[in-house]
Length: 328
Ligand code: HEC
Ligand code: HEC
Ligand code: HEC
Ligand code: HEC
Ligand code: HEC
Ligand code: HEC
Image (cartoon, rainbow, N blue to C red; front, side, top):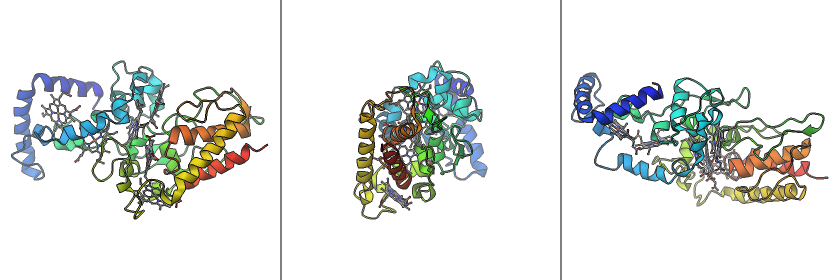
C-alpha cells in the first residue's frame, strides 16, 4: 500500500473513528469464522488500542532511542537521503521495491523512524499489523554482489548499510576525499558480513551466522526492547556468565588499537581528531596506503561503533593491517 493511501486511511480513521470501529467489529466477526486466532469478543482496534501499556510501553522506550530523538530525519527533503531518513519515505520505498539509492523524490513532510516505518500500522487495522514492514534479504547496493540475510535484522539493514564502497587507489593515490568521506553512518550490516573495509576482505562473523535475527536479537532481545540498545541478557545464551560486552577482553584490546591507529593518523596530518564524534579527514587526497588506513579508522571508530562486537575478527584484522600500512 502506498504511503499516500496509508495517510488517507489515517485521516479517515481520525474523522470516522466510531463508524470505522463499528464496521471493523462486523468485519472481525466475519474473519473469525475461519480464523480462530482472532478472539470474537475483541474489536480489531482494541487488539492494539487497549487500556494497558501495549503501545505506550513501546512508545516510551522508542521516544528515548536514537530513532526517537535524532534530528537526521530533517535531511529527508533530499531524495538521496529520504529512503533511510524519513519513516514515510522508507515505507514508500519498500512498497515500490526500491533500494535507498533509487529513491527519486525527497520527502517534504519527513517523519522519524517511527512505529509506522518498521511496522505495518493501520493497513488491516488488526493485530497482524504488528508485522514488520519487510524482512526480505537486502542486496547491499554500495557493495556489488553482497546480500545480507539475517532474519528480522534484514529490516534494519535496509537503512543500516554503507552508502559507499571502500576506495581503490589509482596510480598509488586516492583522490576525492572530503570531510564527509567514508562509508556513511550505518555500516553495521556490512561489518557483520566481513566486507566494506579498505585493502582487506574478511569473512562473516559468528554473530551473523549464529545469532538468528542478527540486529534484532541483540538490540531488542527477548522483550522487544524499543530503546534499541543491546543488553547483556542477549549475550548470555551463548556467552554464559558474561557481565558486560567486553567478552574475553576483546573490546578493550580493539579499543587500544583504535586509539593507536587514530594517533598515527592525526600525527600524519590525515585526521582532525582521535575523538570519533569530532573526527573528519583533513586531506583531499592521500597515498593509497594512508587513505586505506584512514577509511578503516572511520569505518570502525566513527561509523560501526561496536568496538569489534559486530565482527571481532574482521575489525581486529583491519586495525592490524591499517597500523602496518601507516609504518614509514
Ligand atoms: C497493530 C496495532 C493497531 C491496530 C489494530 C490499530 N491501531 Fe491505531 N495506532 C497504532 C499505533 C502503533 C499508533 C501510533 C501510536 C504512536 O505513534 O504513539 C496508532 C495511532 C492511532 C490513532 C492516532 C492518530 C494516528 O494515526 O497516529 C488513531 C486515531 C488510531 N490509531 C485509530 C485506530 C482505529 C480506529 C483502529 C481500528 C479501526 C486502530 N487504530 C487499529 C496501532 C494500531
Ligand atoms: C528507516 C531506516 C531505519 C531503519 C529501518 C532502522 N534504522 Fe536505526 N537508525 C536510522 C537512522 C537514520 C538513525 C539515526 C537517527 C538520527 O540520528 O537522527 C538510526 C539510529 C539507530 C541507533 C542509534 C545510534 C546512536 O548513535 O544512538 C540504533 C542503535 C539503531 N538505529 C538500531 C537499529 C536497529 C536495531 C534497527 C532494526 C530493528 C534499525 N535501527 C532500523 C535508520 C533506520
Ligand atoms: C542507506 C541509508 C542511508 C542513506 C541513503 C543516508 N543515510 Fe544518513 N544515516 C543512515 C543511518 C542508518 C544513520 C545512523 C547510523 C548510526 O547511528 O550508526 C544515519 C545517520 C546520519 C546522520 C547523523 C550522524 C550523526 O553523527 O549523528 C546524518 C547527519 C546523516 N545520516 C545525513 C545524511 C544525509 C545528508 C544523507 C543524504 C545525502 C544521508 N544521510 C543518506 C542511513 C542513511
Ligand atoms: C526500528 C524499527 C522499529 C520501530 C521504529 C518500532 N518497532 Fe516495534 N518492533 C520492532 C521489531 C524488530 C520487533 C520484534 C518483533 C518481530 O521481530 O516481529 C518489534 C516488536 C513490537 C511489538 C511486539 C509485537 C508483537 O507481535 O507482539 C510491539 C507491541 C511494538 N513493536 C510496538 C511498537 C510501537 C508502538 C512503536 C512506535 C512507538 C514501534 N514498535 C516502533 C521494530 C520496530
Ligand atoms: C552479537 C550482538 C549484536 C548484533 C548481531 C548486532 N549488534 Fe549492534 N551492537 C552490539 C553491541 C554490544 C554494541 C555496543 C557496544 C558498546 O556500546 O560497547 C552495538 C553497537 C551498535 C551501534 C552503535 C550504537 C551507539 O550507541 O553508538 C549501532 C548503530 C548498531 N550496533 C546497530 C546494529 C545493526 C543495524 C545491526 C544489524 C545489521 C547490529 N547492530 C547487530 C551488539 C550487536
Ligand atoms: C547465538 C550465539 C551468540 C550470541 C547470542 C552472542 N554471541 Fe558473541 N560470539 C559467538 C560466537 C560463535 C563467537 C566466536 C566467533 C566469532 O568471533 O565470530 C563469539 C565471539 C564474541 C566475541 C569475541 C570473544 C573473544 O574471546 O575474543 C565478543 C566480544 C562477543 N562475541 C560479544 C558478544 C556480545 C556483546 C553479545 C551480546 C550483545 C554476543 N556476543 C552474543 C556467539 C554469540
